[in-house]
Length: 590
Image (tube, rainbow, N blue to C red; front, side, top):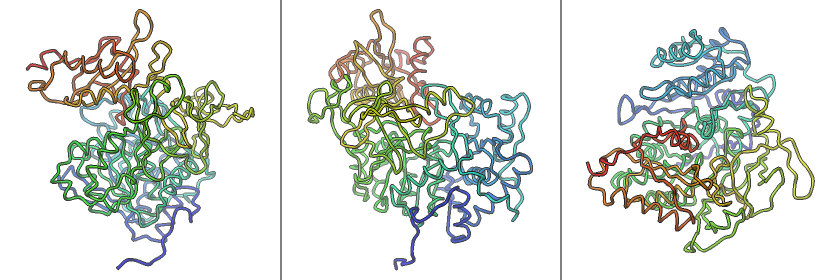
């Protein structure tokens, strides 16, 4: 029988810090499940472990007590633990003890530690939280970065205790809760200062947008060290008193079916993923597996973190329509670490419109029929979240709707700045805007570095300023070109593409790099030469330019961020230096 017990929405709460929310739910609904982690590493079928709100509060308090004995409030504490319940407990323990958490991933075999080393050098933590499984590698990593071993605290080695850290309410809601290091897609990672107030506001914005209650079930595989995974997978459900069910990113990539299976098994109501995850599900989940899924409980699939492609949205909705998933469940959004997470989000499903590509290249917006020459199909990223203002600007002046420019943001979720980078903080977070009414506002604006436009009140994102390809005075957006290349090479096992500018005799020219998935080239329906011609024809027809170079790379050769975004500038630099790992001609015939 359905429950008639009253439910609490996030709108009905007024928590000023995440620890206060957790302790409230621990007192009010202590036996309710807070977090479930499904481990596919020890058993491919998945082994579930659950913490109730009371257990979560008790374990976070134990971590806080252990930290208080080693560090002082305000010290940085790095989290370099495997993806699991210990990670969440460690993060909350930092907040309970009024330490500044630095969420990272644990060192992994066959994965570069360059980013980990860079962040540890920049943040200078007093202590590192990890688990027994990663302790040796973490200790060695701290020696590499600081010359001596930093104190390492084992999250799975703490004694059971009912001791509590000092009251979790921060001295001020603006106290820094953690450093969110950027993905480094256009430059080296920078630590974004996230206050307790930023954290709560961002979690509340996402929860209110979807009317979350304590009865919701959030299912996530997103990395905890990434802003989207941390806010939507940890902070948002804990603020709402809801349940979160997690699996590791690796478990998802190995078998995308596991993600949707958990939604089906646990009655998941809310989930999030970047665009590539939709493509992976469509490509690798079999018809037999699809027939076993029930997705009608899912009211929101938040799509963000990278450019949302209309083809991916439609293909996912069509494949899983029989499972109960509707196109209206898609909630594309736009956000960035400097805004803690979200800036805009769709309320009533994905808006897919087509625009004249030639006019966008000139900075102007004009709708056109889907079958018109040069039509660019874009997915809207929704409207601003509660309390957020969005403007499109050019050289510090606000542009009217239907003009392309840089996206500027203001709101209570926006970070106060970067860790130890005052000049970068001033340049990015202290912008003044000359409004269309002639009134100057600021310095309260965040310059995002992203390009887009507002159309009928909705934000459409076109790319990054630093990635823009400018040829003969016209702007060309790499995500658009890359989508064209992906479509043109539909018969090939394409893993990722990158479009970037190269220097030519008469100015910038276009280069395209195509990374292929593992597998021999023998038996492919096209030759290398035919493939290059297909790319040049498609890009020329749709974009009015012809690539100067088309290169093919081995699996994993495209430089990417820790969250999987292609680093186009790094790709361009490696191409210039001749260090990209090209596929040999023999691959196509061996």
